[in-house]
Image (cartoon, rainbow, N blue to C red; front, side):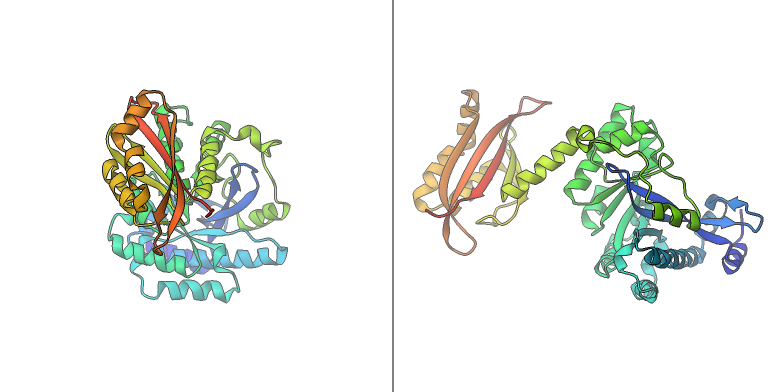
Length: 396
């Protein structure tokens, strides 16, 4: 293990270098971006692994010096790419120590601006493990980075005690899936279920997903079925020095291009696309479990009325909806969507229930609304489930 003094000396001599590992589009296999990774290259050409010096640097502020050094390396490389006429965003790792660093955003912006680069070309990566401390400080720090125009990535998700709470709260753009979740080559059913769930919620949150450590064709194929956006790993390319990376980008090599993208679209990917279409078409979509008297809003945008609770008891949802209807329509709405009546209708083989009413909007105007309940079957229980689609109708 090297000392902090030796690490600083290596930086001064230029022995610490940025190696770049390309990131590829999961479907087209074209280069989209890269991650800058520090390597210690001795004068004799020997490359020292970060494992031999980063742990020691992390014990002090030496790690922040390395991070700023790597940012400078990435900016210089991007400036060279600008001359080539094609630039790809670069992810730079930043330690948790930066969260409390005074003037961090100013220094970050000043450095990138000094090279005349767009802020969106720099992705600020912070590891999942860095987010186990003061959530408020972390949230403020990430928000500041994001508001300054930089891309924010949560790195190594799944490597520790992953929390969906911080993913929900953080205004991050990218979620990087740790390679440990691919340890069994995606052949283990539990591993596949976990990965599918992560990619599903990330896509619902409109986060770009990157799978790290992809080394086999089987892993790539499964990532595609999960609608993973980007791939990083030895299957495509190992980390490489700057000159090799620049040459790779100039050639814009597509490593395993697919003749027909539709052939590799799988159920999970298709499901995500279908959900986006449904959410775009209907401003209000509700999922309800009639058996358990519960519901939650799947989407709620640009609907006539926005005062409805987002989740809770189904009976209370109908009571709330009834009060928002025109007096002439309240009885019909209450009777039609009464939970017991819906359960009875389902038992009698009814597939859907539809009703057009006038509902009071947020602006105090009654407008025509079509509400349709579709009965759906749960694959894992006998519960009676309903998908409700609500649409604003044009006036007669």
